Length: 205
Ligand code: HEM
View 1 (cartoon, rainbow, N blue to C red):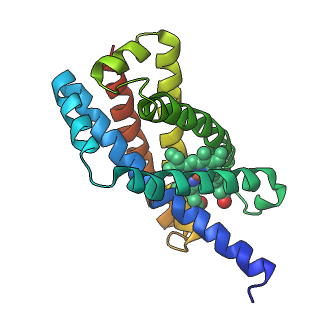
View 2: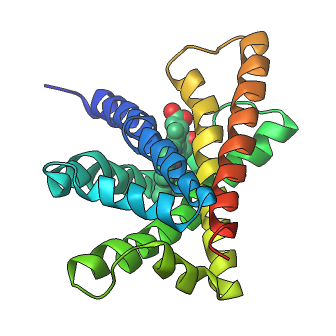
């Protein structure tokens, strides 16, 4: 039988993996599809229609998004409340990023949960029909625009900084040189994904 220590290890590994596959991959895909809004209303509405035609969409959503996302979030909250997890010795910047990883986790949780309610659950209840025009209505309000921009940048920061720690968790980037390279690569991804996300939001305004 698995000891408490080994089941804790296993669940930590599952938490780490879920953050990248499937949740992180989904975030990357979602922002890429959102970026079609930069091409205008027609291009964006075409993307939404295409997504809606995926077979067994609701099953895919549960398996690839809701279950892994909320598993990662619930266990993530337990991790943030467990003071013992700060056992690594960080540099000054890494210490800040460790803290930001936790702050961005909570912002992402609020933002993503609201976003799922506002556009997915409300759609299932027949209250809205997601489209370019619907997004224009939402982000026309500067507070909503700020909320969406903050949520997108927080989720991207959490994901890309998470890719850095993921490399350490899985023993891929253990040396200082490998970690320096990883910092640059994930830093560039952070800038690219944030820019794409905010540009898509701006195109609704
Ligand atoms: C878009 C949604 C999210 C994505 C893509 C994501 C992705 C990731 C990734 C890739 C990691 C790194 C795993 C590792 O170091 O091995 C991570 C870590 C973490 N995530 Fe998330 N995450 C998301 C949402 C959340 C939410 C909503 C919470 C909790 C409220 C959360 C809490 C955490 C915590 C606490 C860690 C750090 C674990 C540690 O330092 O050992 N995440 N996340």
